[in-house]
Image 1 (cartoon, rainbow, N blue to C red):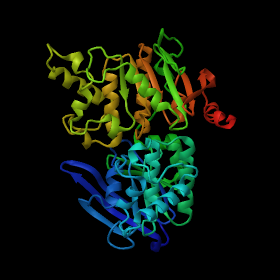
Image 2 (image 1 turned 30 degrees about the vertical axis):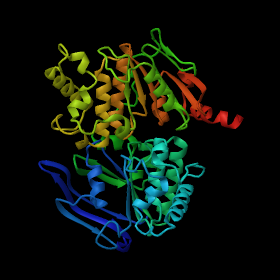
Image 3 (image 1 turned 45 degrees about the vertical axis):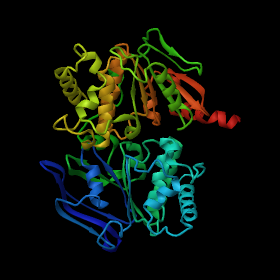
Image 4 (image 1 turned 90 degrees about the vertical axis):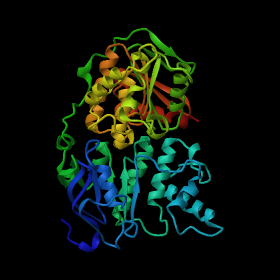
Length: 474
């Protein structure tokens, strides 16, 4: 353990949190000190978010103790949190969002001070970001919103941040911006700060963490130095042995006729998995939206839909927050199973139960509210909604945000199996490793296609090269 208790920021002893009969956290003990970068891993629903909310003061423990080194509260101790589900106010500017968590900003000139502080934080974390402090948040891309949220987390805000908890902080960032963040995390911890880093991207966990804690079913099942884990050993500790590839799910290359072709040069054939890649914000999301809207109705559902959509930005484009898990899944199949215009409740329940099992949604009852699920399990619901439909074309906008490594592999296998049956997938991802699972890849740069890659040419090196080559030429 730690040699110098004076360096401790927070200590948990047998901390537990129960929600009725559900033991979300079941007796966790850990200490965080200055200089620590702790990688916190576990499948969706393992208890990571509950642990974070105990440390940041968002929840009180049902039992056990939490002690901070500098005062009785997380706020006084300098604990900050950056959540996976972004919490910015969309109708306020970037600077005004900083004000919400910065009580010292007062008086007639507070906006000027807020602008300067958030610009300085963005410049430190993400050099060359081009984010305007006076821009309203709802005008920003999801990657830019995530960058702003992270910058607010590290900003001084009247006192020094000592412990910053980052929950899936790179889930919407392209590789270049993610690398900037990882560099800052190392610098921050080297200067005496501490970070709890939650990510399902295991390469990032190994890159920044000096200690890794594995949660499973609300308990710590492994804790040791990051150098003492291998990637497979870490996956095994989480309780799921994931295959390295999805090749077993079916062959590539046996495609049907062309399903669509756009004036921009984007195309796909029946049974093909087509990837969109490149730096975030370079036109991929717009290309997906145009194609989806051109093949779907804005006001009327269909028994035989041409296309279905899996959103990566869950709160804005995905979940129906007032509805149950069951309703969120079944909305895509109501027309298909209806009898004389009436909802077939038995069929609806059967579909939800089937997909709960197939995709591993962690809930004891699909009638529970969708917001009772962790972020990753909400994403599983969106996949279930799409794959349960009969639509031959599935459009996916960075759909693996916050999904654990085991579920990712299961979804990859499902996608490949559906493609073998003749379904076509158009898949935008900020993770190069995911894009390399595709049959064909279009790389975007400055809202244009800069390269079309197939077969052995789909490599991280060629994708990155095509992402930057048009910029260099200009």
